[in-house]
Image 1 (cartoon, rainbow, N blue to C red):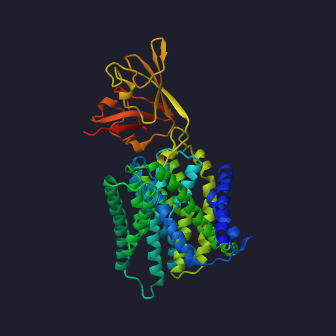
Image 2: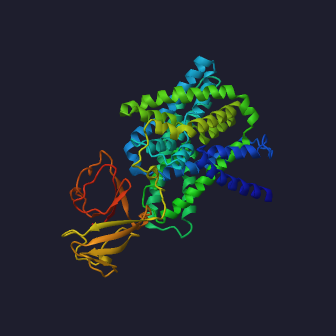
Amino acid sequence: MNLLLLLSAVVVILSIFFVRISKKSGIPVLIFFIGIGMFFGTDGLIGISFSDFSLTNNICSAALVFIMFYGGFGTSWKTARGIATEAGILSFFGVVLTALFLALILHFAFSFDFAYALLISSVLSSTDAASVFSILRAKRLSLKYSTAPLLEVESGSNDPAAYTMVLISLSLMNASSGINILDIILLVFTQIVFGAGCGILIALAVSWYLKRKSIPEGFDSLFFLAVALLSYVLPSLANGNGYLSAYMCGIILGNIDIKNKKSLVTFFDSFNAMMQILIFFVLGLLAFPRQIISFWKTGLLIAVMISFVVRPVVVFLLTTPFKARFPQQAVITFAGLRGASSIVFSIVAVEGGASDAIFSITFFVVIFSILFEGSLLPHVSKKLDMIDESEDVMRTFTDFEEDDSVDFLSFSVEKNSRYEDKAIKDIEFLPGSIVGAIKRENEVLVPDGNTVLRYGDTVVLGITKNKIDFDTGLKEEHIDSAHKWKDRKLSETGESGMLVLLIIRGNDKIIPNGETVIRKGDVLIYSKRQQ
């Protein structure tokens, strides 16, 4: 027991140490997590004997549930809704077409048995959320044309489709007398309908409960862990897709008002990091480098086919109807990283009767993808002029937090504005902000709550940078090119009871008035009075 605890502590400490090295070197940190597992594994220096595919499948599948749930929970729907249709098509049809195209190439060009080729292709058909999130966050890749949220939603939601394809492929491979097309249709139907339906219903039930009851202090994190597990288990009992359910449940709960959401986000961020360390360490521990190297030719062939032939064709085919620009399509193509989910699905395939070779081949492809595509994605994005300096990719995530430095903003008290002739204590400012000084004619006043603002005053307001407390009931509205408020004055929005407290415009923060014009890219921070 003590040795197991010691091993756990050493692995976590090493992983955190390599996070710093990853940021400096540009090598995705997930490679280091896998490397630690290999170091401790049978072929590594420590030499821990571990070859239990069934146990690995159980551990990694459980960890993947939380990664999927938090992938949805951390998605900012306000940022992502503009690309939801395109991301959904990439997520579902991208997986199906990737599996079919790669299988056909392997079968007709390289003489693979079709059932086996389809199984390998299905295992590798989804892009990996953990890999994509890690690179977008670590490198702060703010991409043009809403590409970052598109990649985030695609990679976060396409594992369920890949899992379904793996089940179909296993059924095809193990069917001695052919497979009934009705069985496939029923399998797809139950996987999607029961999976999505259970996730939505559980999220709505939890939302309804939270509006009426509060979770005992200190137990809210445990409550949401249980909800994540429940969202996976219930549809699985009915042959539904548990991963899809967990993702749908997470995305709904992550975009509603939840008490103590900041502490939840902090907990889940750490817990999700632990799950990533666990899943990649265990997979590395299971891997036998000598076996993986023995399949390097097959692995390299498949990696090249999927990265430079299949993925580009699928991306261009599915995004062209949305009038996507070539640089954006190229970046989406290059961001098709394979990762932990593919390796987990290869273990499912082995458990389902496939040879161990599929695990080694998949492992090689994943290492190639993370090392080659993952390391070069920031450079490719810059070369294609896809970096948007005016945006912050972290706003793609609902768990976005930044440093505690203070911004000082000033504004003038206009005639007949909501500030004129009111005491500071009676004015609704942004929660957490403070009136630092008032310039009145040639005098600078140090105010208190009873100080009354007058027409012509210049008010200096201190706001803690990017630490806006949404637990106080604040909401935010992202203005895209199709938003109905774009290019309108605040007074012309027609929203009764809405009080806009702050506008974030690029790197600037604006205290608005009724004459302030709303621009594309603005983020409006507002409160909503009950009518």
